[in-house]
Length: 314
Image (cartoon, rainbow, N blue to C red; front, side, top):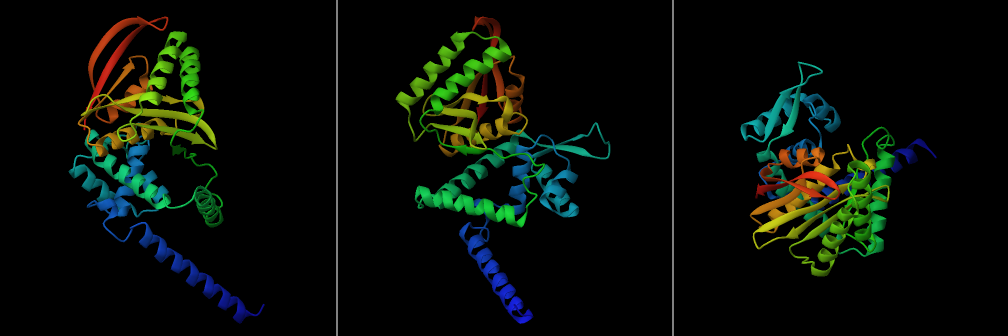
């Protein structure tokens, strides 16, 4: 191959790549006001990272998002002015602050996340099942080719999907096994979950209720449900994660999906019932603005427990 031919081929490749970039940015609406909000694409991305990370520093965000530190600082100050962002001193480095969204920040982010999910679903909807798999595989290949190290040393990202045959049995099984192993609960709890799942399947209202299954590397690792308690009240139920999926921010992500769904459907309030011993779940709920409204000691599942009712105004 001559130098002229190589140069010509390279030019063709550059033109093809630029053409694809123009097509794709237009197709996903990047050139429009992003997700119909007043925020830029970069600001929404920073919101996303804050919602799904456990107290990152500004330095970490700037590095991972390849953002100029000054530009990121201005974004964070705007979020603070809107009361979306809280800072606490880092115990490891007094010069750094740990960042976290406030309940108001989560409330602002939730409809954007739901709209992004809806737009992605609309983009995929016209494609046949086989074409969808080809598209996803092609996207993964593009990412691997352009950034071969992208999968090394980074937190794996779980796939959230609709339930399939066999998933409901898995939900019951995981509740029975995990709560017996980690909290000593007996089979009464598994029976309760089985009843709830069976009622969900038989009485499912798809316009008002939803279930998300979470997968890592094709393996089920989590689930959560939103059910219709009344015309104005949604209930979050049966949030479950396997040990493999913990520490990845997946519990927060599943909870955010529920909140965004409920808001999108026009519910005014979301409620949930949990137990005082479930510290990780309670932390997720509190960070998103849920309020503990009732506590009651009871004997159940072979243990002395304290049941709790939490509420979130939507």
